[in-house]
Amino acid sequence: MREIRYVGDPVLRTPAEPVTAFDKDLRRLIDEMFATMYLADGVGLAGPQIGVPKRLFVYDISNRKGAVVNPELTVDDPAEIVEEEGCLSVPNKETSKPLYSPTPRASGVTLKGFDRLGRPLEIKARGMLARCFQHEFDHLNGGLYLDRLPKDAARRIMLQAP
Image 1 (cartoon, rainbow, N blue to C red):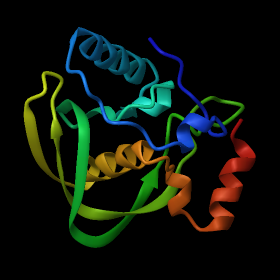
Image 2: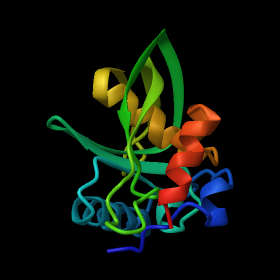
Image 3: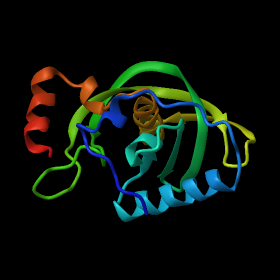
């Protein structure tokens, strides 16, 4: 279990560095990320969210589960879908539950990267899985879903965050 970093922590706004070693330490980190994500009732978690500025994330959406190291994301279908989105790093200061807001995302993406053992992977995603991949990929580039919201919506959320 790792501590989740909250909005305002500089690690969330710093682009992550590539992973260079596919070793037992990486596999242990990925296991800890899954445990942290599940304990927080999340569906995705990126390295920077636990203070690890490395390009990796884990996810578990609709029976699709995995870890992606050094991902590259390509938008296949730029048609914008606006749905509720929240983030473990942007919780309500009173309830500690994620704060949600309608957030625009591309409807289809392809994610390329490596699994926990360094084997190449490629996943085409739509719907919630595509949303998750885009959300976690943003974290690796120092972004938050708040950056995709109108300024007044982002400001309302920030007033409720720690």
